[in-house]
Image (cartoon, rainbow, N blue to C red; front, side, top):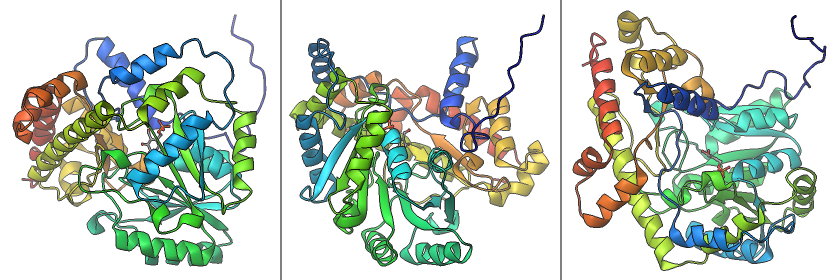
Length: 436
Ligand SMILES: Cc1ncc(COP(=O)(O)O)c(C=O)c1O
């Protein structure tokens, strides 16, 4: 007997939105590995280091905290997180207030939902911003950036997009910036930040500045756009990347008091959806933002490792004949193979980024994500490569015992899957005729 089918329709906002590609590929690769396949996983970026002992202890000590904490977060955590991140990201804590949420992803979604109007998205952009805009019933307006221009986001480009969007009847009111960037690993210069701030100020655009990778800035210091545009910038960040605590599900949004009605709206959304963040996890987070030397040293070591491993990958990429600018931070690369399109089509029959990603998985056993997931057109042969497939505990041990170890020696010793993956990628691209 077939199962009965109940007729219904998905809502307009949700219909057509697939599962997030990053989470999907993570589960797919886990299942394939469990069935015995050897795959290098560059599809999902997850910082691989163990939980620092102090944070694990704080979590365990708070296991008895089973009451609902305040909707916006424990006051001690909100204040300490604001003080901690404002100091490191170079913005002024005065005139800002913090919200604690179950990951910065939900906070970005809540901010998108709360602020009227359409969102400007420099593209390529992280996989979730555009689907979130749709869930919020708004339009995502792409600001296309170019690989040949190092994916630069300038004030001029934003101004032109705003003018065009308005002429098309759209209502741009917010922009999401993300730097160090996922997928590119690149940053935004202080000069461009200043120009972007000016354009946003002139046009009444609120910046949602996703600075989740700011404490893994291995290519130079990080500066928040909130330092240039304090009255109109919401900074979002968390503990998922620099402390490898993605599974704890906690993040922060810092909201300027100048955006008067926004905090009550965030409180309303939080109170009607997630209610509050797990009480014990908030205690663990307090330990993470109290400036303890052991935690700070851990972050410095993890950042150094991310820098060595990602720069190793960049060097190997450049050796395949693809140019790539110096990295700013995080653990991603976003190469564009379009100039080798004819060779790749002739050698492997691939003509879109999805086909390229699928072919790499079957021929080279390397999982990547296609550029289409980040907003690129199909014929742009871009791939997002996450460089985190190694044992973080072993890597930390090696760096602790050999603090001055050379980058290549480090990666060859601590990250064998990454070396193997680049050997396979090198062979794959070398086998495309004309691509030497
Ligand atoms: C660019 C970007 N923003 C936000 C997030 C979400 O991080 P969180 O774990 O704080 O929700 C991620 C992580 O996947 C990310 O890559």
